[in-house]
Image (tube, rainbow, N blue to C red; front, top):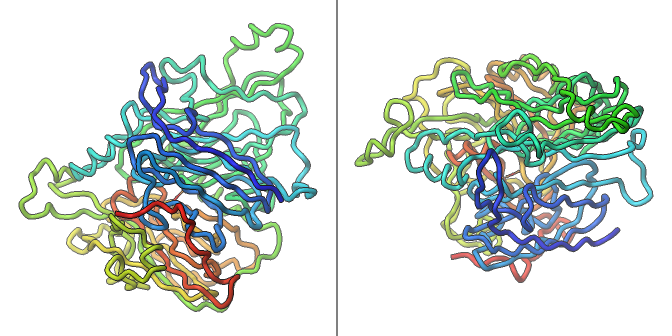
Length: 550
Ligand code: C2O
């Protein structure tokens, strides 16, 4: 196994999109940032130098970080942020994960522009469990604001209202030729007739679930979240922010140009959605194209028919098609049977607050919670350091195993029933304990799809459904044979997902909705997993350059 050294300089860089130049926070001047390529079993050593004027951390999304929670990255969870002028070296090993992951900033909304792909190929000497593709292309779906994203979130926090939606969706940082001033920079993915390309699709958008499609081509899914899946074929993908999907595409159509396109899956009833589409171009390197290049390039690409923005049926058909390639070691004896509600809330305007600070519906402020706890990050300590050094008063360990009140989560819930209480609460697990967790979406304010991401773990998604989870009825649907292994579960709009995992990685691990606007409002909690017995079950000591708190 190899050790890969990288330097990441976080810095402001002028970036021109949608006809305007913005000073944009980037890594090494690149937007999106550098692609990291490793093999399973390799070690990454990434020195992050902060030359920006914001605090920053980098999270290696989906990397299990076995015993190296110090390298996980979420600000105030596993580390205090790297201050302007500071640096921190993330050191971790890829352990039994293959496929596509990604990295992104994990403080405020910096990840809007600070992100990149992390490609994990099979161990040296191993092959893919599918025919070797002729090419591989990472495709990072994103969102672009015609403003500084940090200002957008600050404004929302000040007013209590929903933040402005983005001005464009992007593929590898480019809006594509349906947006103003963007046509000439549209990403082109070349392919030769008969070739197969492995597309590594990542939803790195801040706040938007996205459909993804290539005109006239079938997509064969072979992996997701750096685990292989039993291959299946589809014409459209849906990815929640945080999720990755590896697909094979074969050039078996008449040589031409075909749009690769992504647009919103906006499941929220009544919430604003942007119906614009980002595009790249799959371009055949055919004889016709190479001899009359200009003609080929000027021909209009074939347009795919995208699903409607609220096409939940297509989403369900897709998400329920995932299977592990073989029988999976799903835990069957459950130590913690948990039920967490996930959803929005509305807080009354605090006493004495001005109306301009309470601009959510009816003079309230938006909030979000799990089990009615709206998560508040510590501001001068990290949860992991507080835990490891035994510092009291930073968090409490009373995150509830069940919601404080049970009612019809899909109904028109009265606001008075659901005003989340703020807290920095963790749920404690002993090393090796098994967890079943029902994630129940609520319809408080609006029912929508929530991409729930757990740090430090992969989990099996053993079932999902609509309405209220009913243990008697729904246990029969559990797939304990070959459920997919993921790090981000798309909890259906007005429905639920059930996940299982074994707490075999000591540390403090954030679990949150990967729509950043929902994290901002508190849709998060953390699991505290204690050390087991012996070195192999114990968190490593903190690195000497771990950023200082306070
Ligand atoms: Cu990809 Cu906590 O995030």
